[in-house]
Picture (tube, helix red, strand yellow):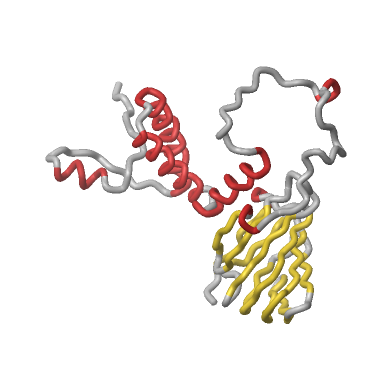
Length: 235
């Protein structure tokens, strides 16, 4: 019985084999077929790192992770935003902490709900995650740990948001600081300018165009799994 040794490989591997005088059989897969193969590759790369502890293996892991994110409809920038948000909410691993046991909340003698000892009230621009997505520069304030009821973003764009999308769970509320634009909600156009507030309810398809500086509030706080891509646009 033939053994199946197929595995996901980097894009230049066929050429590298050819230049070295070796032969190989390659099959190009669709995105949906390649995704499970790449997830198997993630397991392989992790195993290789754990065995070798080499920095190159960590780089291989990152390459696979970035491509998996793309195949699941996200970008490297979105992945980095989520990483930064989780770091702001729960911290990183810089303190080398090891959890020995987990105390039940009922017997916890430390901080309880309503305590103000560790409350975070002011969020600085330098602590925000900064990304550019679909033609809009965004500063994302990671407030979810303190307020799951709403999320806050500062946005700037010269032309508008080059994607029509909807969010199944959150309302999108925009306060326009500078400029003017047009919001297209469920194919209907609504003009707005500095000083105006635009409210897009959850579940409504929308996008916007214009030269704008604005604050965007999502209520409840935005969660990636509830966002649905409709189409990309050219502005």
